[in-house]
Image (tube, rainbow, N blue to C red; front, side):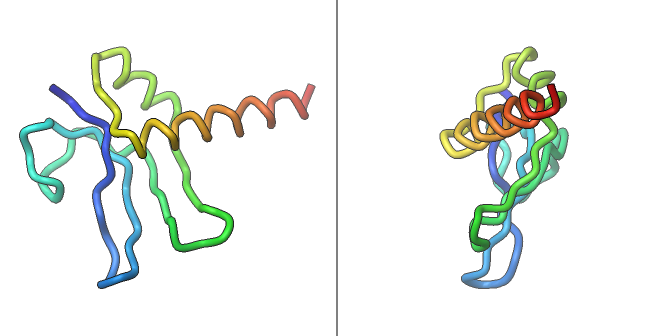
Length: 88
């Protein structure tokens, strides 16, 4: 099964994350199938970028997002919708 989850980077006590598609049986730091974006929880406001087209591709293939990635997908979808509404 393919999972959408966070891959940790950064120094000790200064984490940053990449949002990746990876086989669920692999370790967190092993080879990934696709990199979908990044997430930095240490900034205020929260900084993240997510390629929703690639996320939708992996979700259509049956990938399961982790709880954190699922909340980031929801937040990115809301931000994308609000920017589209403001352009109209």
